[in-house]
Image (tube, rainbow, N blue to C red; front, side):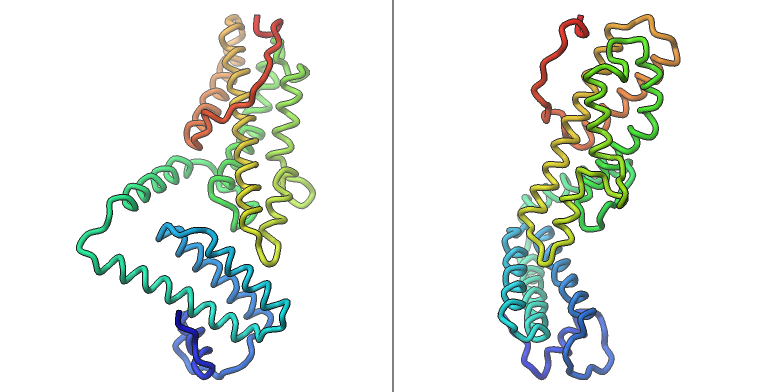
Length: 281
């Protein structure tokens, strides 16, 4: 792995940032250190995603960075060496991909699956509670917020004369879950996502903890959506004499919820629940 020589390190950094003017060797300022760290993180993200590498490579950089801070290593030289290293890793992979006469079919298939998944969820708003949160989490939050803003008020009226009205235990529980998952708090972030954002703001980052928070949010959102769909389908099946407006509101909420479950691939993520026999009829 190539480590930039002291006299050329800042030239390498300039090239990494796309700058071709004259460079005077000097220590990095705090602002420049932050920018370089983010640059390295993004390049590791690119390397891991594009070439199907282990996330442990990104975590290893974070560990090295933390160790350099603790041991009073010259941080400018450390970061310059790190950005040179990741640039070389990427260059090696690019050479490996270009030189063979044909690429293996595996990555092509994976690329198509990833692109198809992105296309399916692109219709939902990107509720960017943090720019580094996963796109699935950001757009799933957008879908939940659309339910809260566009469907929940209509359902309050539509379910009024059913056993699943908004004062019933099951709907009170769902309302509480929706607020916890999707309604912004004082800082503009839903309460459930506060820990997720906190992990993204940590320095250095713990990527295992970030992945765990991401998965927990998606799982809880899946539970909510599947529970809501089950209740609404039961109401439509049992209460056939509801007014036209109520039927329309329930139908629209079912269509949106079912669509979100399919688009985010959440069909099999269901909570084990005990139905109220009186309400199930």
